[in-house]
Amino acid sequence: MTNLARNLTTAAKEHGGRPAVRLDDLVLTYDQLLDGARRVTSLLRSSGVGPGDRVGLVLPNVPAFTVLFYGALAAGAVVVPMNPLLKAREVRYYLEDSGASVVFAWEAMADEAAKAAGSVGIDCIPVEAAGFLELLAEHQPAQDRVRAELADHPGPVSLLGHRDTLPWTRSVIDEALRLFPPAWALSRRSHQADVIGGHEVPAGTLVIMSPWLLHRRADSWTDPLVFRPERFLDAGAGRSGYLPFGQGPRLCIGREFALGEMVVVLSRLLAEHRIGLPPGWSRPAAQALVAVHPRGGMPLVVTRSDGGRG
Ligand code: HEM
Image 1: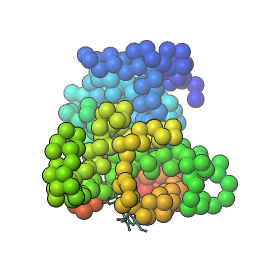
Image 2: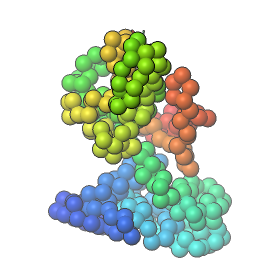
Image 3: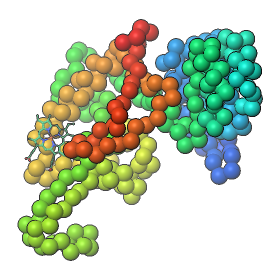
């Protein structure tokens, strides 16, 4: 689509590593700006926003504005920027007049925009500094890549051998198990006295290891809290601190079956559906029971890829 968004793609190709947006200590390079904008585009497309639709922005001068602005343009949408100090009545006027399909609002000032959006029956997506990347992390690009891989895959998906046949799909699962290993803690009773990591461990001690904590160590993983499946495409990368299925003689006996099952289920689901998050979603706290659960559940919006609601 030819519009201003094309300039960003060109700039990122030529000067990807150079600063594009700077606010105090925060610097976004052209590559990062483009990546963020692409996620916004996917988010908008999965919400049904297309060429010619209007997208409202009620944000102050923050980097998120630029990301949303270019993301909306790349979706072919028209941006309707609004002063974040407007009252609900005024925002409503802009929304109605422009026929906006959705509005993003800076969370600290989102009340008036949310009231206005509610009164005209559209979604108001709150944008806050810390949660902004999480909002984008609906991971539609990762989902799209699974779909593209499946489209190239001949015949039905089998239970085994996915590292070669569906490397991206398998990496998405590996990365999900890294960030959210259901078995968050493993325990052993020491048979004899030993020294572990400089600590004396007498015989008969209960030793607890946590895959959850190990998987989030910055000395083993680059940007450990970021969902980045590509780290698993490189065979052998960072595997030493990775044990979602345990390790050693008591390694999970069902590992290959569980992984195969997850690839089959994910591929069947994503072949025909998009998985999204409800507007206003915030990540539920992890609840450490026998396995880790999202406290209060994990609501998802499942839409058919052809546009119908699943
Ligand atoms: C995502 C799914 C699964 C995860 C995250 C998982 C995780 C684990 C972990 C971490 C252990 C090691 C416990 C320890 O070291 O104390 C384990 C052991 C075990 N798992 Fe799984 N598991 C999964 C699926 C399955 C399935 C599908 C089966 C059976 C079909 C299975 C059967 C077992 C058995 C029998 C053991 C005990 C092995 C032994 O002690 O020798 N698991 N699992």
